[in-house]
Image 1 (cartoon, rainbow, N blue to C red):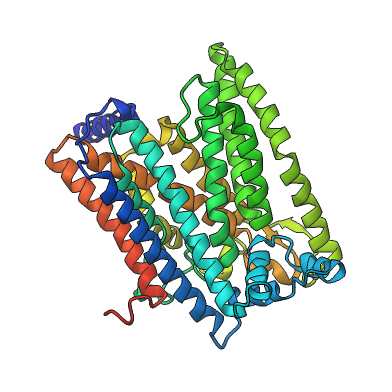
Image 2 (cartoon, rainbow, N blue to C red):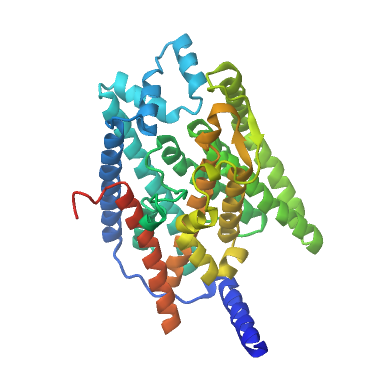
Length: 442
């Protein structure tokens, strides 16, 4: 027994050390795909996402019941371009970027309301695809020094359709699981692109105070400006990504300050300066958030909700399921697998640490926070968790692509790659089947 335990421990340590190595030190196969083919694939994937998202949104808008997308379309119709009427509509929905665009398309461009809503929803899906492809491409190219655009486009396409595993034998298809892609909610789908842009600017800022080259933005002097602009856009679109990302980023930077003070390597001072500049860049978003919060709960019509409250753990989650661990497994099967098989990567690399912290912070917010009154069962802090899930899924796909391109072709490596692609594609199939997107094909 002792030998078996020691053998297992040695293998676990070896796995961690292997994953903890800088991915750029690995050797990778040449992707050999011509640029024009990758660009054509990006265009084709974007068109596919636009068409599917448009059709899904149009079906939701025309459904007999009052779905989220349909309700938000009606909210958009209330944004009349007159001072008093505009204020009344804003008090109901302060996170209004999606609604304003729908209203302009409807009232100024002549599109019917549901067509305008579907069109806007689809274009935000394309924008999210483009930003996520950039996120994957920049990271994978940084490590491999290869042209990874085709793989990045495929990874971003997959991330546009990942959902929880649909296991019908548990009763409900999702059994209380949540998804990075809740296709029924336009504001969460709209904020994904801005949230990732904030994440990317923040990652470059952290890399700079570690004296490492930036990955996403080359104009280093503008990083804090980019961060502030994208953060404000995310707050105006839906603040829940911001709720998750700011605390998560603060924890990562705080860890750098503490370790820098212990090691006395100068990082603590640089990280402290970065925190100050990030706080200044965040002021417009925080001010808007405070005004939005006060307006929504005290001036607007918040359906008898009075405030944000701390609840008993998992109170709101239990409205949807009694089996939370199963719900987590169904929703996070692929990233959990990638974490188990590449633990060092998630503990050592910046994107890996951020993925873990983002998911933990988002889940903690959903676990302990809720709105009081009639809005408690709306589970509005689940959006924070789903934002963290989106980051975790994206980083897991980056790790899967790096593993796929690795020149190490042992049997264990091939099995690991095949299992990873199988699981992430199973997540895709589950979402497509749950939203009945495949009904006309199969």
